[in-house]
Amino acid sequence: MIQLEKVSKTFGAGAGEIHAVKDVSLNIDAGEIFGIIGFSGAGKSTLVRCINLLERPTAGKVLIDGVDLMGLPEAQLREERRKIGMIFQHFNLLRSRTVYQNIAFPLRKSKLSKTEKHEKILSLLELVGLSDKTDAYPSQLSGGQKQRVAIARALANDPKVLLCDEATSALDPQTTKSILNLLKKVNNELGITIVLITHEMAVVKDICDRVAIMELGYVVEEGETADVFSHPKEKLTRDFMDTASNINKIYELLEEKHELTQIKNGEKLVLLTYSGGNAGEPLISYLAQKYQVQANIIFGNVDILKDKPIGKLVVILSGEAENMEKALQYIQARNVEMEVIRG
Amino acid sequence: MSFLYNIAPHLQSLQGELLKCMKQTFQMLFISGTIAFFFGLILGVLLIVTKKHGLMQNPIVYKFLDKAIDIIRSIPFIILMVLLIPVSRAIVGTGSGVTGSYVALIGGTVPFFARQIEAVLSDVDYGLIEASEAMGFGPWEIIFSVYLKESIPGITRVTMITFVSLIGITAIAGAIGAGGLGDFGIRYGHQMGYRDMIWITVAIILLIITVFQGIGNIIIRKTTH
Image 1 (cartoon, helix red, strand yellow):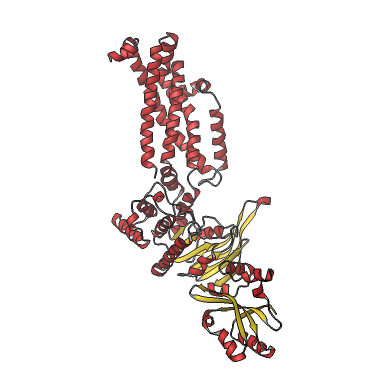
Image 2: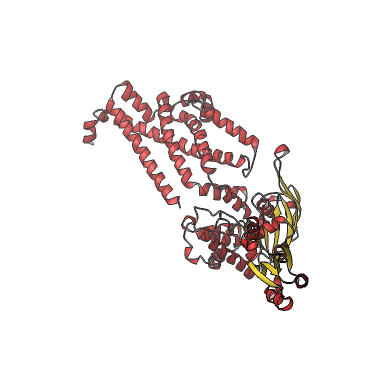
């Protein structure tokens, strides 16, 4: 659906050159929700703008449905852009127009008849749940409502793709949830491919099928959301994962030599990470039954990544040396990632 | 009416002249105001779109306009008027009278107005421009449907400011031969020493400004949401 081939974007020239996006290649499939996550300054805003050529890449190719956007003349590019909806962090609604007129705005060039346009707008208003706000002006709406209008407006021309540029970053957590649910609905019911960029782990965790992690203009890691975050290869990925859980608290506790982390001879302090299907299995009780190894849980955390659970447990294992050895082997055989923190 | 004659004793004999001068002022305001409004608007838009990162970025055009506006604005109006006499002769055939004042009035108003329009338009959130581009709109549609439409309150505000300054320069133009209320005030109020005629002139000008601002305020109120 969307193919980026070795896309780079450089601003300025000479000494003041800024390489915002470097050599990024991505394949985004039709119908998926693809997340691009990175801290601010990672180049994700520029990258998402390269998809509809709001920023023209300095190198590389942008193909949408096989059409090479960069090869198109202006007029045709505008035609293509109509098939790519976009929403923004600050909504970008026209203040002088009502909700209805804002949604009607992109329909100006549409070939639909007047009544068809009218019905289209009403059905979009219903989709985003704002049928009662037809004649309100943006200044009379809350942030969440404004983003709903922006989504309706972005969908007016029946796009194949919806680009979301930090669409929830200006919203509170609860509103973020409701907007994400709306995006999920748009993806499910209308089959629209969604590309969203964000710095919030919660967003990716909730709705993204696949995710790319960006740092300093590069995509450093990419894959199925649950895979990427359950087996992070890059430190940055782990950092993001940590922002969404309290598990790295253990390292703080270790640092301050908290009594929870004190172990006796022969004991081991381990971090267990298990994902997907095996998350639900009664590992701990198994260890006790089979190997007489006691697992003292210090703390734990379960994240749901796109419907797949990822569990993390920090435990102190104690038992006889021989049994401990077997238990550890058993854990590894069960495809549970284990990090011995101490002992 | 007799009340007016009481407080302004010279009005009775001068009312014909006063009406003629009012007509001249209205003529100057209407014709040069309308033309200056459009030229100023066009120039202001040109400044915005040719600016760095503008819709039709063009450094040469921008630099030229920017400098030209600064230069013309720094010439005092009374000198600009004399400077533009040959231009006026070439365009409207005369450099004096009401007709001869148009070129100077427009020349004195447009740069001032264009700068203010530029300031108003640069207040339009860049995000709106970006969103419109993402929707597939071209530069012209964005200029009319976003820049100008979104800026109606701001444009109205600076039009009112410019209108007041235009009234000011019509009075100067009047003093050197274009007629109008400025000329009337100088001739009768100053040279003849009729204080009541100065007051009448001031009252009429205030009335014009008040009506104009009243209309402007209604437009602003109706278009600000």
